[in-house]
Image 1 (cartoon, rainbow, N blue to C red):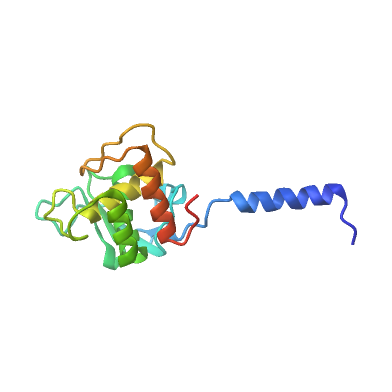
Image 2 (image 1 turned 120 degrees about the vertical axis):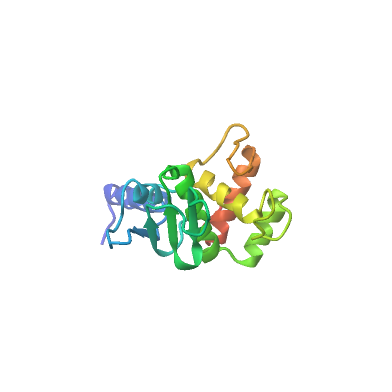
Length: 184
């Protein structure tokens, strides 16, 4: 079969489209009643600029049951559950909580060590008694990387995570690498 210039061009364009396509999204959100893909949350997952955790994640539109005050939001990463109270239903907070599930499902001890070292984080990963606990800084980084490919100036997150453009690029690259995705 002879390849005509038009067919060669069509094949080249198809290959280019596949090369630049976004990675397949692994997370499917499910409400406790079984409703799949609740909006706008599923669209935030689907538009994430970093890989998402594998499998279903149950989204509870209710206060966090693990905090005495109900909490704005929390994640039970082991159960693949996210709780969003009335004050915590924005994209930034949702993706922060999804970052905790990603951490539990995808990040290895070595990946956590690389992340902490690259960003100068101190202390045990899950020591929430620390003002800037590494697992909270990671979740903030995950949320920021999921929303912004680049930043132009220092970004100040609510938990104290404050990367500049270079730290942001490094954090996003480490998150992609931990999922086996090219850091590019």
